[in-house]
Image (cartoon, rainbow, N blue to C red; front, side, top):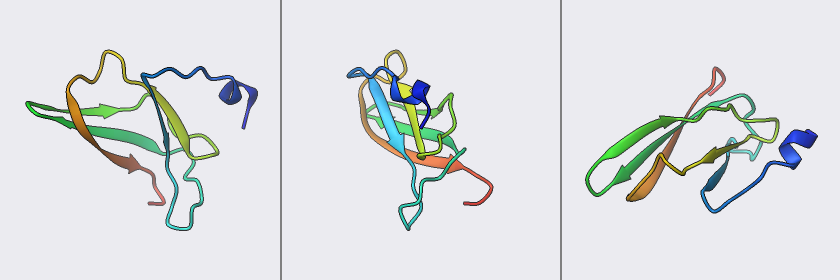
Length: 80
């Protein structure tokens, strides 16, 4: 993990997602899409950064998601 990844700031609005395969190997360089559902509407949000070497990506929820009850995560990756 690079120093930039280690010094990333977290807040209560930061969502940290780790994508792994069925053998718990991190899936690197995957595009992550959140499908967020609420009582009245849903949102499809493509996260701005692909997963790193640990299969992780960070996303700041502030300003995007309001009144959301659940998430579904999908990925785009040529091997999966």
